[in-house]
Length: 288
Image (cartoon, rainbow, N blue to C red):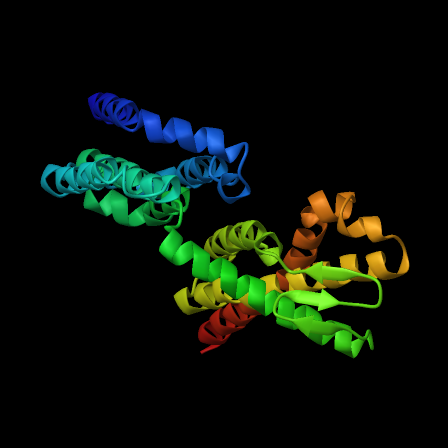
């Protein structure tokens, strides 16, 4: 009981230390699509911690040296963010602060429950890293890659459909409609959500590490194809139904959920196939 009380107390101290960046992150999660999934991350982590609690906490102990070293590392990361706050943008400031916060809470767990429990709780604890915003040096190339790849894929689909167009860069010109595949069309939000979904699904349904990796890696082509289908669909509706589909339609503003579900439908058969190979492999080993 004392162990739990100390653990909770240490967590509360961490919440006080990291209160300001956590408050900013919560506010951004309601107003910025790049941060909208962050509030769900600790809930998912807590769910898996609770679901696997018997296995995780069957062998517990203290690891204060390792745990407190990790906690200090978290404080150093937070200090870097504070000292560089005048020189970096808000996103990168939150990167250092939240990486420090997650490191603190992981170190807290190691301190009061030990390395054996940490190894068994590796997934729910490391899933908290999803709360850390990607620094712009990583985020911007990813957005650009998705933007350019989606434009190329949309162009290929339009050619297959026999729709004539002239393209220069990210701009597609049709007879009486011009569209631009902007950064907002990169689908970075849904791509992040798909990645997290694939990580969770892999943990729940797959045992092999490389098969989990394949499932997560498949998110990129699926996300690009999904973006291309969305771009093509809205373009065709603007060409043949109403131009307002490009500017003032629900499908353009908030229709991402429809295409996100479409992407999940593409990932599901791959997950089923990977799971089936594991089941067949286990059956063959039993037969021998």
